[in-house]
Image 1 (tube, each protein chain N blue to C red):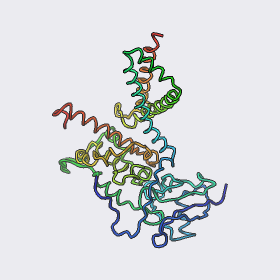
Image 2: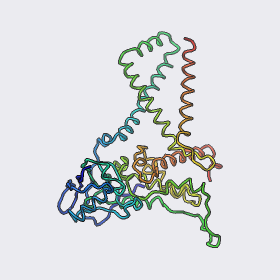
Image 3: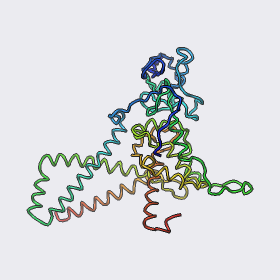
Image 4: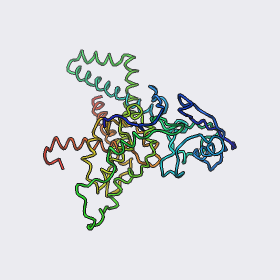
Length: 138
Length: 248
């Protein structure tokens, strides 16, 4: 709908309030939205970490270097932050699912938890699978 | 309990003020009074020039939406006692130009509402002799929530996307478009798609979700928009994967 925004033609002097650049600090729910948007940077960062891991795998010296790099204090702090934001991103994402999917069973809409729960269960099962795979050799 | 409460009311009289300023009024704080009662008290007993919209006093007409302490509220459903000891700050709805005092200019919304064709569209109207278009309770249930909208514009005042880009069609109009799309009697989805699928339509929404939080009628415009996005993407995939069969 890219048509000019029109208001009453003959109004003499309406006043338009400017919107502050810091609108997202005005309400907790706005801030939470911005934090959620920013958390996608954590997702991207984790993907990069994984790609670097895969890249270093065939070569033992490279793999040792990668592990060494991971242990540097600033990276530990950064990854701790990234983990917190990743968890926030995941939980909020799954909680949004029932809003976007109106699943109906026999004419009745399923309650929100029934749409969100399978996501959380799948997450837990997949995570447990990964943990098992990683730790089985230890 | 305090006997009175102070209302900080935004005043904008274009012939007097260059920009809005606050004026304080001390009003009785009765347990059964809502903000609208206090505004009417001011108009009746203190300053008759105060301008604001209202009509039904019972959450049906959608006229009395204002910012109460920064939150969009129907002032007929917002009790003074919930804000004790006060003061309570009353402003016109955000994201709209102000005409006078607490009155906003809403023609932009009216144009956008018309744009999404919020009425039942039929390819071919059945003759009256064939009777009414019948609908089962299940078919009614699919869109009923979105049909509860009273056009109070609280969702527009809460939506930062609309605040930042006035071209965004906005929560209520999109929810009402979806209301008719989901109606089993309607055949106008393709006509509405033109407007809905534009960048300023459903894709403008970033799912802040505040529209659904402030909605006094629990319409959940954010949900309506996300459901439509999901449907649009599914339809798009179908049209790619099933070049002929996927289209109605």
